[in-house]
Length: 173
Image (cartoon, rainbow, N blue to C red; front, side, top):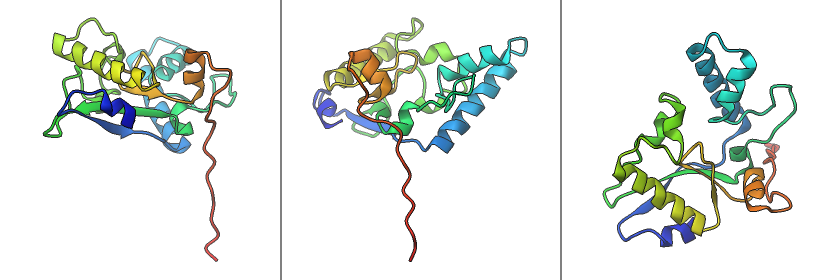
């Protein structure tokens, strides 16, 4: 992140919205998105709604029930935007926090309906993060990975550097 910050013009800073996400929180986000898809598309099958939901919120299991490790649950993914000197987010065409309330296509890094300013800001974020070695998930302009399975796939790495984060339980004694 420090390296990406160095590529930004003076007066701009990266702001981390979210990094590591506990699997229980990840499952809650996925379940809420799956419900949104089922409500928005009542004539579609559960499997179709599952696939649509999984494009913006990674599940912990495939539709068939096989375990998966969501990128945020490895600590290898980050949701990020750019802020100005006053701490205000640049115009990205939407607030990052609104991802679950707007049409999913607006979340895509390369959305055609953006203003010039929003498109330029998305390109800037993509450029600085890519220059620092992270990869963008193209369905979410704000989501970047380093070391998770998605990163390994995109970069051609033989394997991911990060897997599931194991929770440590400490005895109070």
